[in-house]
Image (cartoon, rainbow, N blue to C red; front, side):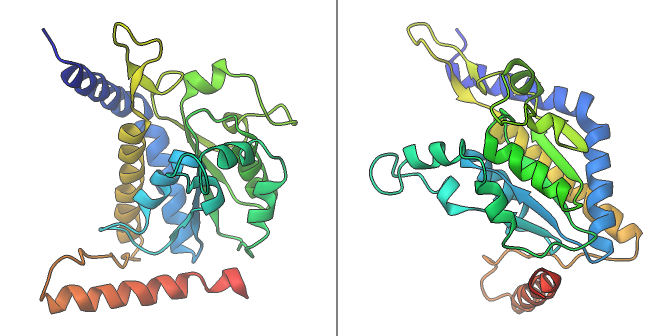
Length: 257
């Protein structure tokens, strides 16, 4: 008898295989866009509410990352690990439905002519997510969306515009997850378990990162990588860490001019 753990592994592996088979052209296009923007001095922002924040931080800061990417981790939308009480789950879920909130976040930056935005949401329908994409495009930023096409297509739009994230993006990458995200049903449980968007989402993020680095090298713009800071006593790693901090600081200059 196959265990639930093994069944989940096989299901997730299947999604990853399908991801490579069907989404590689879109991922390569996303990497090309990111490399073009970063090579020109622009920034690629990543935005996601709730659990999708993890995909933003998977891009940066992370070992092997480099300046040019900026994670917009809005704490009011994603700091909910207490679940109940202060910093609980109810308020962030409510804010995701509140129109006007994403635009206030975007007002905090002076975007440049070469910036871009990656918006992550498995459902692709929450107003704050749709508004972030629409607001980015209104400001001249091309938008890359990472979402579940199955979930997004089957869901009613929640934003007053009638649009979903898939309608507000220039490049759409399907994370292959089923509606509801979870892939494992167990006898005796009404709802499925085993969410898969973290597995496929992290793969997409790292494929974009690696593809962007490859293209930046080809353009003669080698990225300044963040090394592992766990290499104790490694003076070379510490020096590289300082170079990364300085390169990242300089990359943000146009946002606050």
